[in-house]
Length: 265
Image (tube, rainbow, N blue to C red):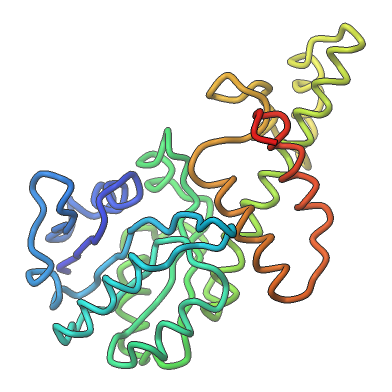
């Protein structure tokens, strides 16, 4: 297959690493040397969109980069199946398919850690794939074939697009909660004169808990969570809950506690 990648940060470069030995892969990102013109990607078999969706001041995800890319692909009458790897709020892919009805869209959220993106992408625990109703059966089969050929032994969970988007946010809200709770438990352990690493090792032996997201401090030397994903996605989750009129008490408490621990609140 011919594979195009739009956006060549840690997600886009991980996508390239996965398929560079078995497909013709080109990327478009004007900020990165070697970028191909977008016009050269529009008729590839599959185009992965890996552009940022940063937080707006109100916490909602800014989808302007995604919308701009899809607008360019639609204007060029792209025949590619366009797979969104960018993190978009639930309902976005369906709305985008209605705005750009001539594009065949799919969403395949990524679950990468920035510090080990390529390794995580090459050895996923699961693949999550979603389609809006308008995506044709042949377009769906093209994406399924691409994923199955590269990851034949990895469980593939195929959902509708909104459910697939929700899996990504729900997972990151859970991880944020786990990091925040670990920081709180570590503070109590410190008050008792107990090394947190000893407590963490005892907890991690329980397979229901595991060792991920329990290190205090984290990789950046601070308690709580920072980085690009967890703060952004937690803020977007809270905005979504507000829009739906839902009480996100636990997630909001995690957000406020993390702001205090990180010196931002």
